[in-house]
Image (cartoon, rainbow, N blue to C red):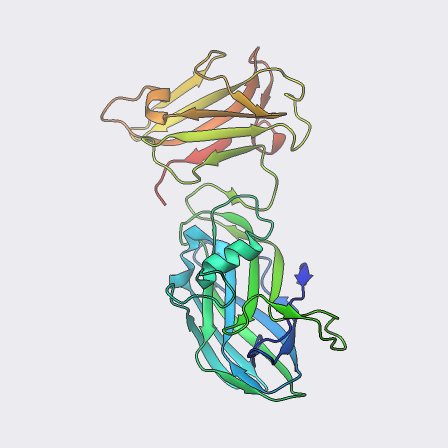
Length: 338
């Protein structure tokens, strides 16, 4: 699988699949030549991911390699990600970079915050992602004209939150001296701008199974619930975006929420009326939202808990409705803490 690749590697680091090292006034160009990952997995699987890398060095130096992986926060990557490397410069492993470690040229940010500020969430559509950052266990030495090849082998236990997921994983490599900086040296095959880092954004990766709701970070969503994880006693905002695709509600001047809550004692409570209680307020052209307190919205008693909700978006007459994926199936949401 060879997803979108952005080569950003100039003066970097060291062996092993990303193995590149660099110091100020020295550099190694890096190119991620391939990322190998299964197209899908099941909740709780330990997924093997291999990053293959070529490196071209134009000076002498020594440094540690930084590896960042973007994933959903619910996957608890600091607990569930390990990585090793093999390269023409030697073999070894990666350790978690302490959050107290400030990134060079990062304006006082640590590595995860620096990656977030530089790369964002790599095209994912739900802002519930984090960069998990590791560094090579030892520095790597390199010399002028070194041509380094290697691979990084990641093992990632996916979906610790038990949610089926569709997501774009992303990878960044850098070194502990140069951060996300560059120079203008030309290196044949690596480009005219030598950047000391490299970002690689993967295709959409699917995790099946689990007891939670599908969390789709990849595909435009007709509705989005914020926060992504909440309990029935939290304020929840549902946003409907009619610009995503043409639906039965396209052109409607007013839209409403039609929802059914399921309680802990197995009862269902439906609120499907075209009143101020359910009316979604326009926030911009074609976008509407409603903020609700689920316990009050469904009118549950003190000894009941709303455990899940299904819902549609309807027009003022209640005769037109939009469901998941613009189908007759309802949107679904399970109330749970992170």
